[in-house]
Image 1 (cartoon, rainbow, N blue to C red):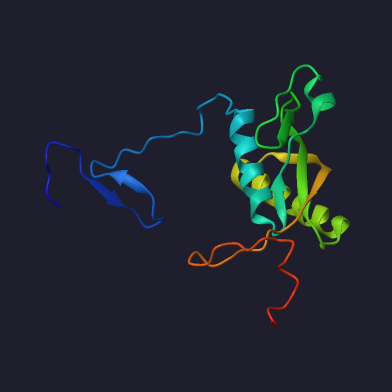
Image 2: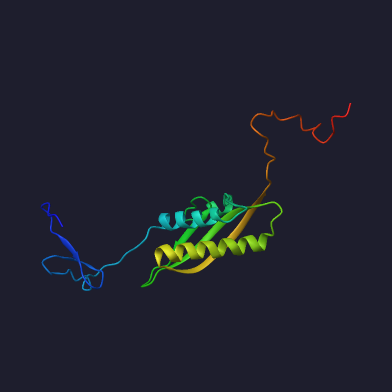
Length: 160
């Protein structure tokens, strides 16, 4: 190894980095708490929500916005309980693609959100509440080089 004014680092038999001089830093006596912002957890939940096919975030509606305290971010509201081990309650407001079975989609969203938050935060999930706020209809996509026809004549053949 080449020293460039910094202390050289070696690897011991347990694959832990220790300085070449043999001194290790003992972090077992460090105390403190790690808290993860509700906004960060909401971003994780939104990413999980968007990963489920046929689901998109929805506006929670005027009644949900009147509730004081928690704000909704991208169709997700997070509540973190205070305690030694924080528990998270997630409210997700979604729109489901027309033709999909709503209970199955909601279960997929619950599982995706729970798995994503637990994996990245280590916090336990108290619950994931899903509120279906609407149905989305897939729009017929036209190739870029074609212009859309008048929809009133699109069902008729051009046999004349």
